[in-house]
Image (tube, rainbow, N blue to C red; front, top):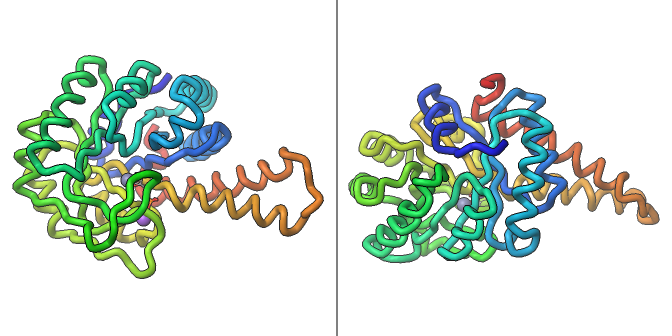
Amino acid sequence: GLQSTTPMLQKAKANKHGIVAFNVHSFDSIFWVLEAAAELKSPVILQTTVGTVKSLKADNIVRVARAAAEHFNVPTGLHLDHCTDYSVIKEAIRAGYTSVMIDASMHPFEENVARTQEVVALAKTLNVNIEAELGKVGGVEDDIVVAEEDAQKAIPEECKRFVELTGVPTLAPAIGTAHGIYKGKPDIDFKRIEEIAASVDVPLVLHGGSAVPEEDVRHCVQLGMAKVNVSTELKNAYSEAIRQHFIDSPESLDPRAYLQKAKEAAIEMAKSKIQIVGSENTV
Ligand code: 13P
Ligand code: ZN
Ligand code: NA
């Protein structure tokens, strides 16, 4: 079945490796991610944005994720990514999600605390993990758009107060990465991660994992960022494979042919990300 990601991430942090949380955008991609995790004997987290919940429906996502987790038999969490809406969080938990993000990072600190407290009160007793964000991660992730000049790094002292006030079990501090593929190299503030990790006990979450150089991801993981989010690189990999298929064979109409190409590309990308965070052979 699907597991709460709280113990998964605590264990990963204690063992100094990460767990990749892959954004999935289709039912097929749920199976591809789990096949990659199973091949590498790795735990994994599936996550969907609110946009994906709206298009596929929470109940269906849970059914497919459960079926895939049972089939591939690796520790699997199902997480709701970047949700600003309490009612969607409730819907996801009722459907069977094992982790939810309340993203109130666009609000002032006190408001972020209040909104997070509300979700912690609902989710914790149900054994559902909660993630909250401090600072503002730049870039575009579905409906969440933050311009580069509005991106803001998290303040270590605020992280400490935030975790104390909310009891949130996982925290995503903005530390210089952005959603999507950036032009240059991200300017990650490792010193800040170190300060944050020293002031809170909880596993930290790295957002904007696509296009972060391998050694930087490893460094973040070593400093306590146990959950590494990857969206853009995975969906681009399999979408590109489908595009290439139709460039090579414009007359092709067999879904199994193009989905096979997509699957191969997705599995290769997912495996490479799992290897970077070091969770291979940990189950
Ligand atoms: P990327 O699209 O940069 O991989 O970011 C993923 C993410 O943070 C999802 O919440
Ligand atoms: Zn994110
Ligand atoms: Na990114």
